[in-house]
Image (cartoon, rainbow, N blue to C red; front, side):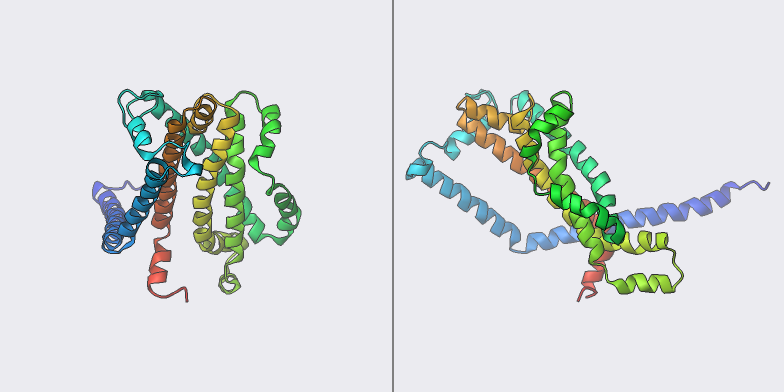
Length: 304
């Protein structure tokens, strides 16, 4: 056997390293370009105006006008003072370690449920859209169970799963799974059949068509479904944590209501919005990175 010399190894590995570095550099440059365009557009400033209008209405309706429907609600002054206080009245602020424990527990549950929904939902959606026979068997059951809200599964979840953690993850998984599988199936069905025919004419096998045509073609729908999925996962998580659990943002909201700690209800809701926005944005960034070909196609007018 011939031994590979160090020079040959360098000749092989260096181009790969350069190519990988160039791809990373291109991705970073593209991200910086999109960020600069976003900052130059009116979108961030309109977003700030929207938040300012929301906070202004909240302040005026609760603390100034004291409207009948809002008289019992905590105002933004009380909420922000509690949220950023080193010695909070109700024991929950950014300076209290327990606050971050609730965030970490909820995020961990979301990560597990979202991972399971992606691993199970994406392949199921691909096969539902790809195989008509498989769809005829599975889709009626899928559509029968999908309208059932996660809260309706609470008694069965407690019976089926032991402990307090697994039922919460199961309830969080359900809504996320349905959104992921359904959007993936719609993505497969949206692919132009001419692409499949062209691949077949070029001699591609059924597996090659599935791998190189169906999966990439469904990617935009898949990541749209994943963004919806992570959002509804937070929605279901709160419902699950209100029923079971000793930590979590949903537990904070429910406990605060029963103990008449209204400012911490708003703190829990605002924290849910912030963390949910970050997770959804992370999924969107991953999708943009994996689908740079889609961005180039749209820039060239390929989606007319």
